[in-house]
Length: 345
Image (tube, rainbow, N blue to C red):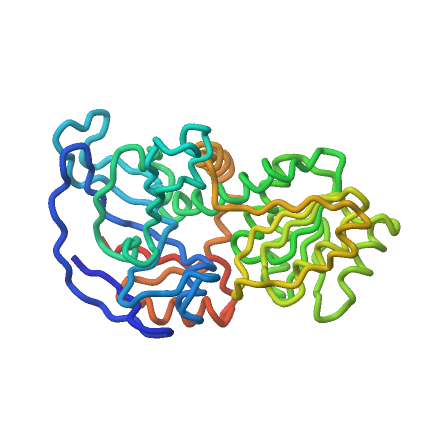
C-alpha cells in the first residue's frame, strides 16, 4: 500500500508497505480522507509535538474517515463497503482512567500518528470495530473526517462549561478554533469573539457563528475584548492557537472567576503564565487532551448541518501531493482552512 512517511522536518517520502490481513476481531479500512492537524504541522515543522520528539520515519495523520474493505474473523455488525469516521486512539479499557470513563488519558494509550504508531497518511489500516463510527452514504468523507477535531471542540466545552448567557473569546481560528466556535454556536452562548491574524480565517470564524472577529496585529486584543464586554471581560476563553502570548491574552481577557481552556499545543514544553492575573481573578484553567467519547455528538452535529461545516474544508490533495499540502497548510497560504488528504479511489 502507498504510505507517506515523514523522514525529516519538511520532508516526506512515498513508499510501498505491506499490510497484513485484518486479524480476528479487526476490520481493514481504506483511508478515504484525512485532515492535516496542527499537531501534524508541529512534527513537520519543528520535529516534535511539545516535549514529544519525532522519530523518523513516521506516519502522521489522525483525522480520518474511510471504507471497510475486509472483515476479520469474529467481527459482527460490519460489512465490506460500510463507511465510517475513524478513532485514532487505541485504549486499553482496563487501567484506572479507562475504568473511570476517562479514556482520553488512558495510561496505556496508543495514538496512531505518534512515534512507533503509524497514522493514517496511508491507503489502508487495520482497526478494532470500537474505533469505527458508522456514517450514512450521503455524508462526504471529508466532512466525516471533521468529526475527530470537532469532538475535541465539544470536549473542551464540556470542561469549561460555557453557559447560554455567557460571552466567550476563541484565540486562533484554525480548524480547532473554528470547530470550537461552531460548538459554541450550537450551545447557544450569548456572544462569541474570534481572534486571528489571518483575514480568511476571521471570515470563516464569522461564517461559523462568531459575532466579531479581531485582528491581533491591528489592535490590542485584551483592550478590545474588555471594551466589547463593557470593561468586564469574557466569561470563558479558549486558547486554540498556542502562539506566543495567546495563553496570557486569554488569561487577561476573562472576567473575575473566569475560565480558560488550553486546547492548542505549544511548541515548547515550558510556557510563561501571567500568574498575577490568574490569582487576582481566581481563574480556572482547563487542559484539553483530545476528546473523550464525544465523537457521536460531533457526528450528529455534522450530519445536521453539512452545508454549514462544508466551507471549513477549503483544500484537497492526494497522498502523492502531501508535500504540497503541508507546505500550504504550514504557511496559511491560498486561503487554506482545513487541508484534506483524499483518496483517488
